[in-house]
Image (cartoon, rainbow, N blue to C red; front, side, top):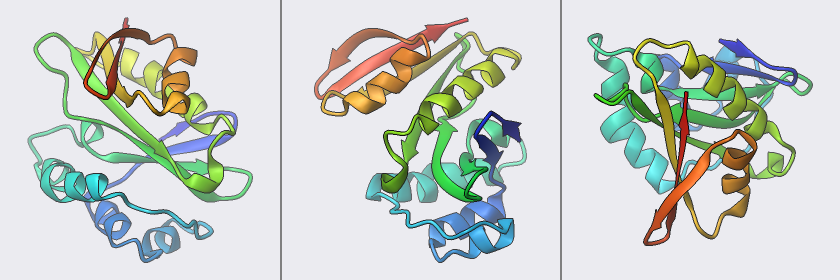
Length: 167
């Protein structure tokens, strides 16, 4: 668990991910949180089923690099977004980060704060030398989160901007 000024960032266990995927408030009940209206995109649902859950279940992997980390707003005791690393570091020490803020909590700086905390966490991990990310060109808020955390735009492909932060 990681704590910032306004947030608690909690990595979810396998059983908690199953509850998250059900999206029936059972995760909030377990964590003793207020209910949040969240929508799980088709892309995230597919990732949960095909990648995240199997990787977190695999005891040979460090689940912290595969699970969702939920962002809990201390002041309201509610989940406000999620982020994840997309697998363990590759041979060059790179890990990819992805994130999303629930609609009602966007534009308040929570994700910028959370990504900053996760950058600091990643810097302390063995074999991690860089973070990479991709954002849609049409999502300037997501790009802003990375810019505010010292990521550099390293190019674009199709509808995506690519970002990198070396340690």
